[in-house]
Image (tube, each protein chain N blue to C red):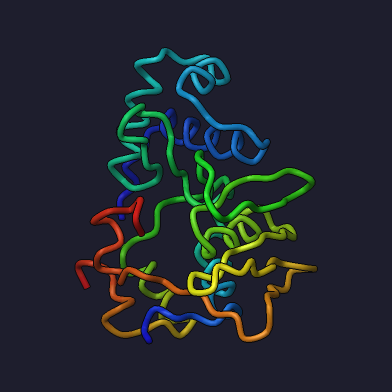
Length: 151
Length: 53
């Protein structure tokens, strides 16, 4: 894939991720101030990042809803990492936070059938969960982006 | 079922998918590279075939 991003787009992307990692929710105003950009520049980068599925803007606000593996809104996947809680979009992303940060995490995921909380995480680089636990991916890959919020 | 993934396999997918997310050299994965990650962790078949494949 040809890189579709400008240097500004990449800075905006990085700032979004760093904001999540710090335990905060990114906003266009916050990104603008952190990077010394104009609001229009940030908005333009958001449009590029959204078009390439790097971020998912909230349909009502235009602010970041998802920047995988992070979620800006509460989800059933609250991930403890480095003493902070961040939200992942799904189990895949909860493990993805550990991978992206190269660190251990813990999270509790509700069983989609019984709704019983299942403890899981990564300890010393090794994933763990309740014995026999499986992850249910409800939407096949060809349709993930039909409705990424549902996926 | 196609969509049921054992935890170790999901964790392996996450490692490969997200390991470069904060790398200074990060670049978006091509469809082929993404598909190769699924294949490498044993997720194959129509359920795991990305659009355009």
